[in-house]
Structure formats: structure tokens, C-alpha cells
Amino acid sequence: MEPMSLQRGALLVAVAACRQTPRGLLATMRGAAAPGAFMQRARLEGVDLRGADLRGAKMAWSRLRRCRLTGADLAGADLFEADLTRADLRGCDLRGARLLGATTRHAVVDVTTRVDVEIPWSVWVGPHADLEDADLQGAQLDGVDLRGATLDGALLRGATLWAAKLSGAFLRDADLRGCDLSGADLTGADLSGAELADADLRGATLDGAVFDGADLRDALLPRSRRTLI
Image (tube, rainbow, N blue to C red):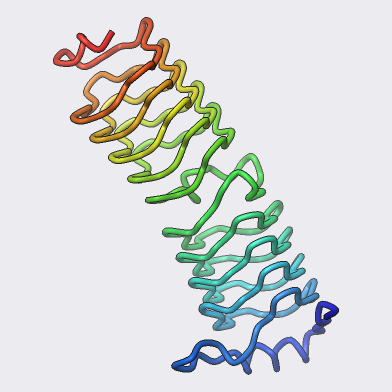
């Protein structure tokens, strides 16, 4: 089936048709072609927008909670104060999008999510985020909540994770060289094979953390955990 092409008027009709029923949605916008569409304040909770072309769409104040936006093109879209709570943004192109005031709590992102360099990763990451092999070198992630997140093989060299919540996180084979993890909660985290040379772990909580095969050369450790070296 060819992706449906929705111009402004037709798009609003399709949006109005999207209603939740006990059995799910009555409509889908999967693969919709609607660049530049006017969708301000649209209520699209849970709508399937996978692969949709929404470049430059006007979506300020829209409700996109739990939307499936995998592979969607939102480059240059206006998402001012949009609600993207729990939206699936894997493979989504958000370069040039206006995200001021947007809510991204528990949004699902991974290394294929394309965002501008100036947008801090702390906007996107959350508990149980899938960031395996993600390039987060030098990222400012102070106090971020990454409990239970998957960061296996992630590049975090020189990143700042002061007071970050990383309990139960998977950081196997991650590059954490020179990373600031001071005051971070790493309770039960798995750092097997991680590179932690020159990392700062002072004040970090390491109860139950696994460091099998990790490189801790010249790392600054909490007083009670200096036997890890």
C-alpha cells in the first residue's frame, strides 16, 4: 500500500478520526506524507506515526504521548511544549526541530535517533533507555535518571554524570575514561569490561556494582572502595 498523502485539510480530518476504543485506535497515520502540516494542539495519544513525513510540521502544544514515531521524519518540526511522554523515537529524525519546553519523560530513544548536537542528551534519556553503543562523548548528563538503562559499549569518554542515577544500569564494555561519576548511584550496575581509567568515582554509591575485567587505572574511587583497583 502506498503511504497516504495528507494535505492540511485532509490531515485534520484524519487527526479527528483518531479515537481510542476498547480495542485500540480506529485510525493510523503510519507512513503519512504531511510535510508542513498544521497540527497545533492535536491530540494524537498512542497514534501509529511510524515512518511519517512530518518535516516542518506545526505541532506546538500537541499531545503525542505513547506515539509510535519510529523512523518518522520530524526535521524542522515545531514541537514547542509538545508532550512526547513515552513516545517511541527510535530512528526518528529530529534535526532542526523546535523542542523548547517539550516533555520527553520516558521517551524511547537509541543510537539511531537523530538530534542536533546542541540538544543535550539529558532531554532524551530516562529510566530503561536503550543507548547501546551510543556516542555520548563529553555529554553533560549531571543528575540524569538512567536507572536500568542499557549503555553497553557506549562511548562516554569525558562525559559528566555527576550525581546521576545509574542503579541497575548495564555499562558493559562502555568507554568511561575520564568520566565524572562523582556522587553517582551505581548500585547493582554492571560495569564488566568497562574502561574507567582516570574516571572520578568519589562519593559514588557502588553497592552490588560489578567491575569484572574493568580498567580502573588512575580512577578516583570512594574511600571505602579503593580495594577495587
